[in-house]
Image 1 (cartoon, rainbow, N blue to C red):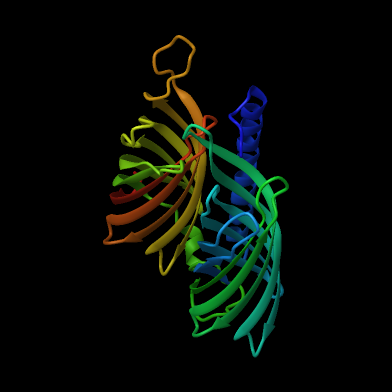
Image 2 (image 1 turned 90 degrees about the vertical axis):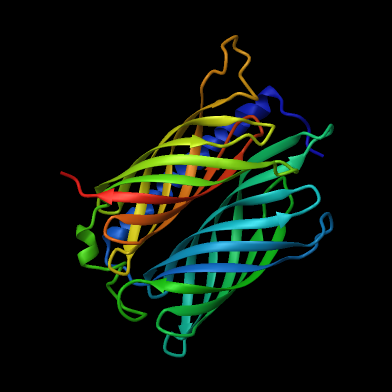
Length: 350
């Protein structure tokens, strides 16, 4: 059973949070490099399945959202969001960064891949008295996948992960899912990334979006509340956006946070710029009126890393529909996920 946080534990959590920020920035830089090169396939996959029972924990569900980029015919890199379900003493999820060796068969209609990388996890654990501990850490991850291509865009994938943190539970995940190849023309098409080459000239226009959704605090009770946000987005250069956002996480009883965030985003567009996918990172300056700091000031502002994923689709020349997932990483055991859906208006720069 985990013990309450000591001063050194808080220092370790803060250090881990900073390490995660560095890792995410490195990943964003890598993805931007991929966007600037004439690389072939990019694959988006959703998988679901089973986390088998271990000696300490019962079995659970698991799911995974995976973006994989082929660098060469036999080498790929990926980023994946993995949710390990709800075990008795652990609610763990995280982000995996992996390099893959790939072996294709039958004229590229089937492939086997072996992956290895780093998994940054968020593990929610119960404390005596009903409180919750949010443990952040890094672990090695080893993966094996088999892929069968059903058409020029659609494929199915079987995936096995082994996650081995040093001082936490070690688990296997087994999932199966479907995916889509994103890009122009038929797969595989060497030298194509998104809608190349015309996409290289595309820079996101000015965009103002209003969101509604739900926040979920990462505790064993998963307290929820209605959440709202407003975002201004502007493209800086191709594949790089900048945003400023106002966020209200609602009132899930144990927190009541609101604040301002600014983020840099790696983005890529597909299907003649009608669909965009992106990943963002930046500081979130917030007030938590349920957990003010003990500095004598009333509701002092605090800064936390905000990591986000987004998906948008054009409804017309000016109107877009945008989905955003935010992860707030705190140092006082009140991490939260925010799911937002919004309607946005775009206009060109003057």
